[in-house]
Image (cartoon, rainbow, N blue to C red):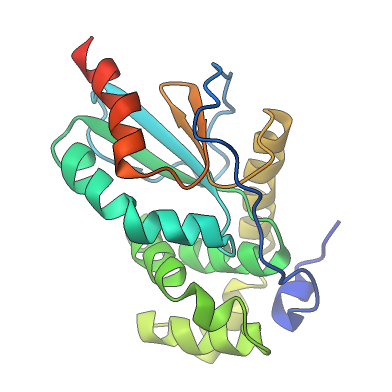
Length: 206
């Protein structure tokens, strides 16, 4: 099992992550409950459709989704109250785990600002010669000091909670990122907004 200390050394697993599945894999799946830290939801609790995304912070397909599809999906469906959305942790390497830990360390209101920042700047920290140094420099823009950065990555409780979410997802059959569950219906890959429309509109029309 990976020790949390590897997160500070960046010694393991920085290769590009994520095999991308076909967008049309549409089986009903019994999903795990939220992990110890809970889900961070966007959109109303009574929304007709719920989307759960499993992603890795070092997954280039995930970053592409969050750059291209997510803004329109949020504007069109989440902000209008039609869809409730949450991002769950499925880190594919220790560096991705570190990214999620940093997103969790300062409370739920900082979760999406941090994941948005890390996805948008992924090429500048995840795929460089010294990724941990680059990650440290990046999150200082979001209020971390070197001391709080290192303290966050030593939080065994957060590390264990994120690992638990990933392990539960793997047991549910998740093997690539991003993977979405739309009212329990599996949709894999960096799905376009047009492809999401085809999934969401029939559910919203019911």
